[in-house]
Image 1 (tube, rainbow, N blue to C red):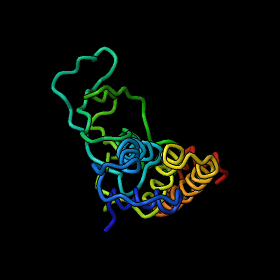
Image 2 (cartoon, one colour; image 1 turned 30 degrees about the vertical axis):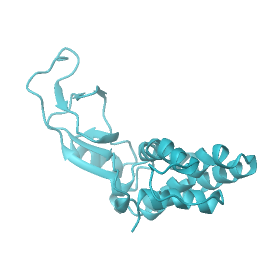
Image 3 (spheres, rainbow, N blue to C red; image 1 turned 135 degrees about the horizontal axis):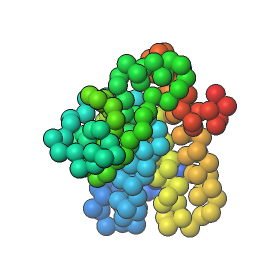
Image 4 (cartoon, helix red, strand yellow; image 1 turned 180 degrees about the vertical axis):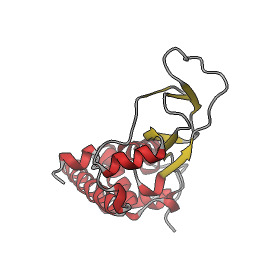
Length: 202
């Protein structure tokens, strides 16, 4: 079964030629470095791309008190465990925008606990801060392992070549994982190409 420790061990053995660990609390340099960097890198990767396995779409809950009524028509509660907002809009308007190759997002303001918008009955699509490794796609797990290896390569191996190799592999795997994830989406939502793919010439 895919687990955080298994992902760490892929990073350690595949890219660094190091020994495996059995727990983050283990008294070893490998465990200490994995514990230090694993969650940070996991969340960073979640924020970079609208991964299908982490995507959520739901109607926002309107707050009774709008403390920024002069600037925004509506104040909504920010969903918990959110890593990144992808768009806030009326769902029909968002779908039409994507079909025309436009961003489905609208103007908004985000604070620690609220989302302000001029869209009535707004729907949000966001990336959830998924911590359960059994939910990760295979591509995301591979990418996470490679990025983790790149982060811990120097303190574990003191080998600049392994740092360079891990970084190169991490970049390639991220590109491949994003393309595979994008291609798994419904065709009606593929007309809008996210900036990362447009930059890569898709």
